[in-house]
Amino acid sequence: MATAAVAVLGSLLLAAPAAARDATDPATQGADAQAAVQADDPWNGTIFLTFDDGPGGSYTDAILEVLAKNHAKATFFELGQNAQRDPARSRAVLAAGHALGNHSWDHPDMTTLTRAQMDAQINSTQNLLESYGAEVNCFRPPYGAYNAEVTSAITAAGLQRQMWNEDTKDWSRPGVNAIVDVLLGATPGDVVLMHDGGGDRSQTVRALEIALPQLAAKGYKFGITPKCSPAA
Image 1 (spheres, helix red, strand yellow):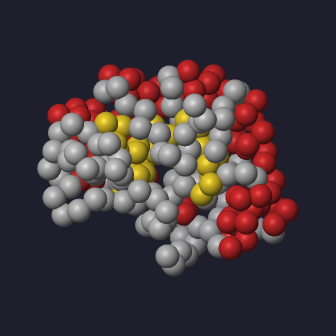
Image 2 (cartoon, rainbow, N blue to C red):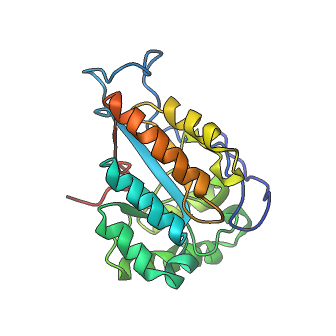
Image 3 (cartoon, one colour):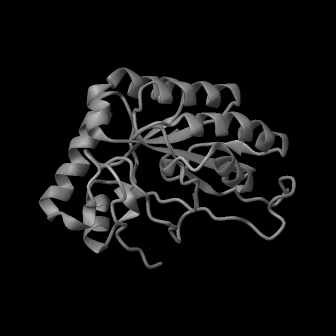
């Protein structure tokens, strides 16, 4: 897969992530995947919801509430600087049974850094999240930007790179219906990108309120990505 660094389109945190897809990530399963979950579905009907750039204050709280109402688990890719400012919400994510992922300290394009800077971004965040009691097994590069050196730094930290294959583009606040459409198009094995931090996430919250019950009615479930799941 070819991956390129994505241009910054706004503030440091309110930026457009790359349309990233890892060859090793779950993907959609067949042309009829919109139908009810099939018996041979290797993902057991599970869609993987992920949230970047948090903790995001009251938006994180609201997302946690919607997830709880829909019996959904998710992976939250937190920035070290935000987790440091708001340890209570990082711990609330963990207490609700979700997983934390490493999303760097302050959201740089990792491909522009020296190796020492890459290591500092990853390790400082890792140490902080682990101090909150998290088992952090995965890293999502900001903007979806990575190269061989970034991948090496991720691996050296004992982490796996976790990308996505369904992008709601909620960072741009495209409207509730646009976010809902992406969510309703998700099928088992899809990794869906959303945000709980980096700005006004009220559209994301409302879209989840609308879409998750409809997806659940199809028989779908919502879980932590395999790469990020804590050990049993």
